[in-house]
Image (cartoon, rainbow, N blue to C red; front, side):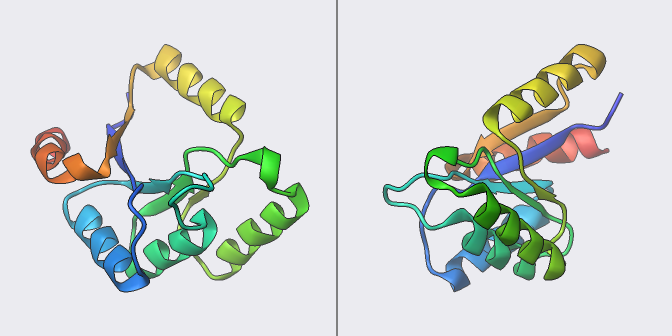
Length: 135
């Protein structure tokens, strides 16, 4: 069975220096991925923000929980993903909600639950769980 992986959903908008500091803290605590929501209200654009996260860390994967296709042109989104790849951002995870749900269900069915997302206010509290499972 795969090792457990843990992610943080970064929902709080902040300037780039604060986002980079948060990303480094998340990585230091043992989390594997940082995701961002794709909403219009009180949020920053996820692709730009995730590029900041990737630039501030060494191994943290990045992705969105889902891209809202109602206001994203697929050609422009593909171009943004290609730009992140060209900039060597690590492990960009992109998929529609249905694709992600199907993948998570398939992983759970085949191997058990191997991935868990923690919302940002709880990262410090959850860090000991990650440390215990990593040993």
